[in-house]
Length: 136
Image (cartoon, rainbow, N blue to C red):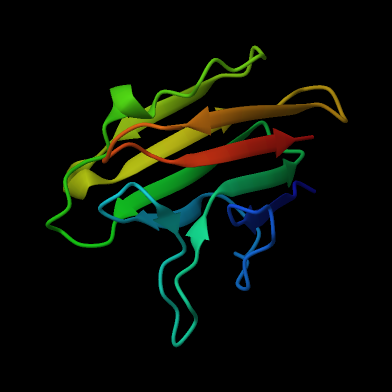
């Protein structure tokens, strides 16, 4: 049975107070500065996600990113390009209507292996700013 477990961390590597359900895709929103957060749910605070961790035995996982409001421009794919990953892992950036982006990541084949992509570090808005780590 396939499992996909997410863990969201803040800028100090502490866990966010609200964590997403397991499964793919992970649905997140972006704000005017490219900051990522979970969609609001009731009175829960909107915490900025700095790191997305995923533990899975699936072949691929996806993160669906959409704007907070319809007035926000699209994420800039060029500015969001990850800073020199040191692995052979691949991802696909797909842009859709209403400035929605879906990132689909390959998952390492070997158990105990992890791949990390660091998006938009030190880049101006509106670049995607998050790190994602996927481990098998």
